[in-house]
Image (tube, rainbow, N blue to C red; front, side, top):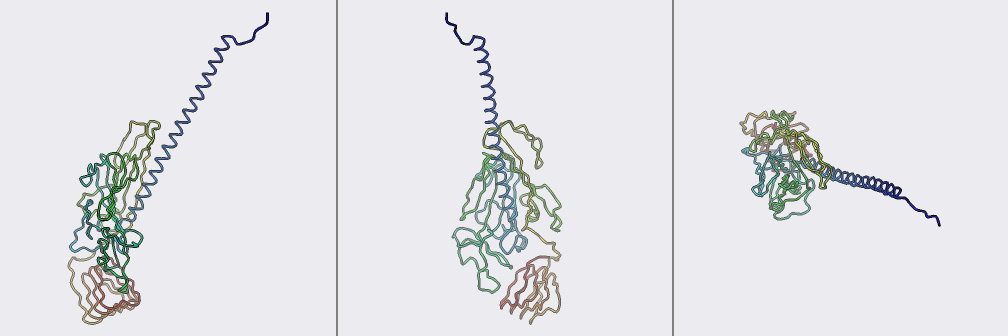
Length: 380
């Protein structure tokens, strides 16, 4: 009888068991690789969104109050009546005095937007850093020189400010009034005033919280004294003296990942947890408001007129307090510094420079401006 070869039942069972074990190990490795791949993608997604929003908000806050050649601190209102009015489609000069404004734990924005529960809102007003190449009729623009500012829609006749030569038009820049918020679907958006109408622009998805805190100068020394507070909406004094903004952004990824077991503490909130499988990261940063500097005032509040019947020539550095200087002839600095600490300067003749003029109010020169004077608007 011919001898037969093959596997016994026991050998087959052992081989099958080894095959199953090896397949299980390979499957487990593959599943772990897939989970790790999802974690890497989710982490990268969160970091990318966080970096984008952080860079955007830092740039916007740093430029808040930039209006070309004049900043919010030097916009003189008579009487002083600043406005916030974050929902307006017709901004005026008074709105420029509050370039940074925020709302704490809001539920509704401008009656038509449902916000994420207990999230904050940030508004920034500023001018473009580039000069407008052309004007659109319904768009708002800012024109500024060292004397003042014009905020108007894009008709050339609305902008009358000139350079020191009295003929060249001062630069005109596009005006931005942007509101940053998180809607009820956790989408971070920007509400913009474009061509006289409101446009809502989606930026990123997956923002679980947006919190703001403000550092405020309360004694007019340009140094923050009160920290981590949100002023009342009508507390213009505090809003005009915001020195820095602390931003907290809690961002989650779009893809399912490992369970989030972390506890988050930020912006006065503690023990914030989530029961889902999304990758999260908390982004926190502080941004200085560079264009909102309000000098200490030493004025008495009563401003009178100082009339010079002829020409007025400096013989040394001169400080005039609580007066509006009115010169019937020429004003000659003669290389010195003239400080009109609280009032305006009106020159019926020529303005001869070679020195420095520091004034709080407006400067009006009927004649020519010569010898390139240094002109600074600053209220002391």
